Image 1 (cartoon, rainbow, N blue to C red):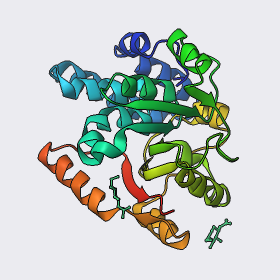
Image 2: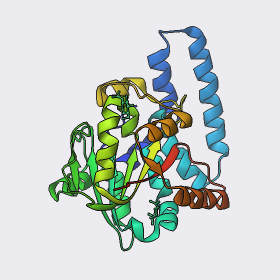
Image 3: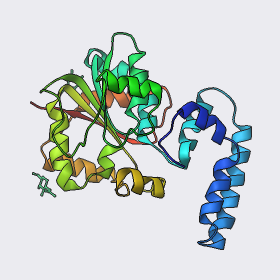
Length: 262
Ligand SMILES: *[C@@H]1O[C@H](CO)[C@@H](O)[C@H](O)[C@H]1NC(C)=O
Ligand SMILES: *[C@@H]1O[C@H](CO)[C@@H](O)[C@H](O)[C@H]1NC(C)=O
């Protein structure tokens, strides 16, 4: 169930059989028999659902959300890149992504035309694959604790995208980190945060992130932005909403569009 993975693709396919269910059962069986029965049922439905699901984009999405059995907003960023390009246009020319598995996001961004990308990995890079190691060697991806100042000059990027990482910060650190993310951005800041009640792998969280995620509601975030003087970019938010509707796309994470407001 680890999110640290050598080759995400290989692992995803290896686990898309009955394996995750079996290992989940193994871990939980000691805690409660009722839970085990529930898990068997859930597992059965997942398997049935999986075998009935067709190919194409929906199976892609399913494979990602099955990854470790949790919902990661970094996976959501990967899916949302084409939509963000539509909405941000020129503002998406120099992008910094901050969050776990940033190598995956940076690699994907670098495949886009007319786009430069960098990444900050706030957690560990121990199990990084060769591609990721090469990004680190080139200085494109950096390991940095986002509780401290980021190693970049003001307005170094046109757009800063953050996923998951903020869910692991207390308000005290958010107060330092959000303005810091805004400082290095010229045009905007896109936050991907989990929905309250979202399932995340607890054991992995403690070993990797040091604490369980604190998934906050939309109203909490909006109150927080107002308190700390961060402005939402309404015109971009509206455009993004339109693109989502047109594609009948429902993100599995909350997405906020902020102005850096220099
Ligand atoms: C964060 O900043 C806001 C606005 O400046 C302040 O009201 C709040 O008390 C701060 N929170 C913490 C935990 O420092
Ligand atoms: C909203 O974002 C767009 C695209 O990055 C930008 O051009 C515009 O200036 C932003 N508006 C505000 C109020 O920050």
